[in-house]
Image (cartoon, rainbow over all chains, first blue to last red; front, side, top):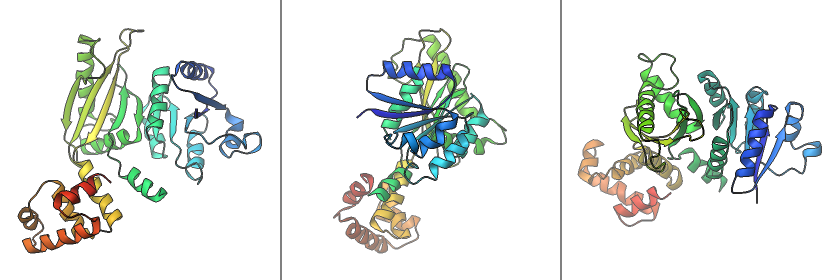
Length: 126
Length: 191
């Protein structure tokens, strides 16, 4: 069963890094990317996303309403136990804000293969 | 089953993990690490206002990074350095591993494992309380039993008679379905 990874991100560099990391990983990972407008539909598995498998890990970009999305996910009975990693700047304030809103993990940008694979391994070990 | 799993997760004893870059800034952290750093920051407040990375961790990172620069090919599986840091809720042990970056010199990273000493025993006693329906007094007895104390020492600490401690142990054995002190420890620690 491939690892189901959802990435809410619109930055092309971060998407390219994620794609390369997944290609290099030694186990199968399904990457599903959502951009700003379609995120809520994906999280609620509505419309075209209704048959999408449940994610094993969700990565949220702090600049794409991550705090609102975190709240939405943690209040959802079906999703609240899914680990959430927030991608944001290398700033103490952003780290605190993310964890105070129930993030499980924080990754400072720019993303790289080493930390993306480490994050997937961390989620598999939970 | 889900409730049991949630309780185990809430009482998890795993270390917090964080990664620092060569400027000693956090570039990856899990929630457990953040919680432990926050307790140190509260403890350190007067000396380190507004500092997210506590002073002791920052100094540890600088030392570990210097060691990594001296020996960049050191086996990544063996820790560069270990340190015990006094915290407000008991001591923390920090273990630092080097992640040398061969692509860009000067971009080495540190992986830090942060763990609260004694957390396992404390968490185990609290988890046992829920699983085996122990009373508050029985939890206190288990807590001291986990430290290897004798009945006499437990009685002195809890201002009880030694016979009362024995009676508590009999009830704990019945609840945990064990027949000895060691049996209680096995049942509690392997929850």
